[in-house]
Length: 159
Image: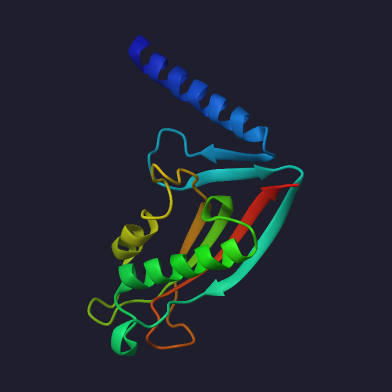
């Protein structure tokens, strides 16, 4: 029992240190307790500027092929990164993400694993450890029948 208490206390202390260090920036990121899943439970904002990006869709690759879910996720996140940079922001400023995934033709189900393979190249890395809150929604289709992924983001920066 003492060992479990020590782990809970250590996790609470780490969360407290993490949250209080982020508060200095006006953006407090609240991790999911006892989880290593690469999203946040919540984000609190104070004295921040919010930037909403419209849904971003994949760009075609060679032969106008959009690729699989992983490839499309990477394409979309690279586009989002470019849009943010054009506004003086970075991918680390993203605090909320809404993801729309279409079922693949081969399985008839959304490829969440493929999405995560692309997503984890941009979030929760050594170079970019900030995580957003996130929702992933399965949808029947998007505006282009070849698109499997569309992502909206909300970025926040200190005023």
